[in-house]
Length: 371
Length: 87
Image (cartoon, rainbow over all chains, first blue to last red; front, top):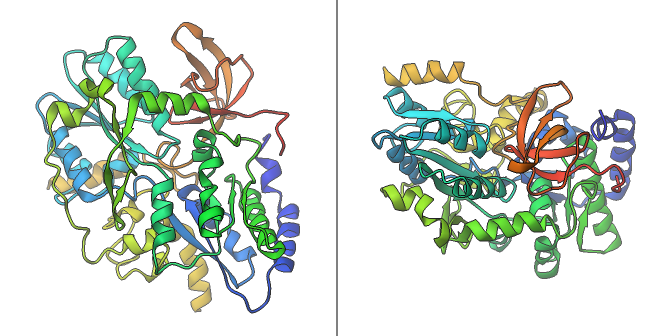
């Protein structure tokens, strides 16, 4: 398959792994964060960490939109789903995220009309098929997904669909990265930048990472050779004493992103003063809400939500995992109290989550090490 | 009891496949080929390499033509796969 097979070539992978070995200084420890959950999955699925020298460590970042949703927002969604006549729509991963009193799936079992959709457009289709009932779309995602929600809201407005509403939980990638870089308990040597977020926002927003924090970053694709190549690029920068933003994924990511997507987002959304992230607390200007022009489609305004802040479960260490301070298997409840079948924390719920990825792939490597 | 039903429903629900990741929630997009266009509505019918098709919003990458390869996330084409782009 074009653009896939070339990036899964084992022979090229071996060459890259060999060159990476030549780039690292023995005795020095390198710690790189892959920001995005998609990369976490590629790393475990293809065993990329097994190809790296032992002194190159990969830590998982906060780039899974499901994992960063706090319990209070799940509770707000459930309260909307229980409103009379409402059809509540959301992505599949979201259904199993625990709130303080159960999941959306529990609410569905209790009688709420909750439907899984693959896109906001599916939700709009449900609204058009049920004009007498309000349809609420629970929007989550980084800048990759936000334009999709924005375009659907614009379409609903243009087509005069008056029963379509949105509970907006979209988040932006730069503020949590800044929060991580400001965090004193995290020492990183570089970043593997998010690939598809960058198709929308471009590479430019990441310039502050080398400029202000002195860390190299390479925006990368999701095939195994993409990730290896990005690590190679970061190590080359370190070896040559450079520190800049590089674009490994130039076949898809333009330096300035997608201007049309940014324009649509700025029409439909505005920044919230602050938004709560699971395990990371409130981060200013990190979340999006609907703009004034779309307030009539904002489910939070039209229906009202409890908006009660709920502390994360005590046993759950998703916060430390999201910040890359601990590995998934170092969490007290990993694989015992918390499994993909019965998750406690969101990192285990979403297939993009670091814990789910590690549970499904990485634990076998760990078991080998222990044995 | 409701929890039991919910867990059973969870087992039956078309959840994400852990081997491919979640196409809707994470930073994941899939390459699709444009089959035909509904230009009036800004939509295109696109197919993946296995032949299954879906309706895709094309506003962000317009204009497109049948045969074009697009990178699609949550029902929206977010980028073109350009044959001439540096690989």
